[in-house]
Image (cartoon, rainbow, N blue to C red; front, side, top):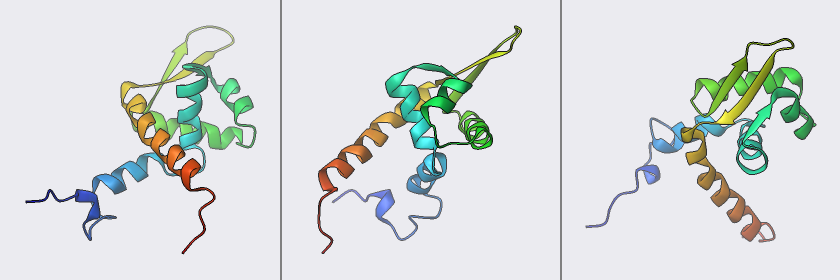
Length: 117
């Protein structure tokens, strides 16, 4: 008997793994931040991220990092010094999402020039 894919049921947007994953990575900048931390620098300070993602506002970056931290994808490490130093890096849970993002990137590369049917 064929195995049923839990993401192909009619409840795909309900309480499925698909909707849970989307809730973690949806938003304009979450995937971009995850990629910066995975591909370019494993540890980045707030202003480094801001400079790297030029189109993001300080407020949006701050909010997005808090959401990623809340969801256990990013860890925030604060150093008690003057001026304050805060670094961000991926957790193991965050790193486990990178292959999913890589597959999305590969799909986009392979199908970018397809004509819709």
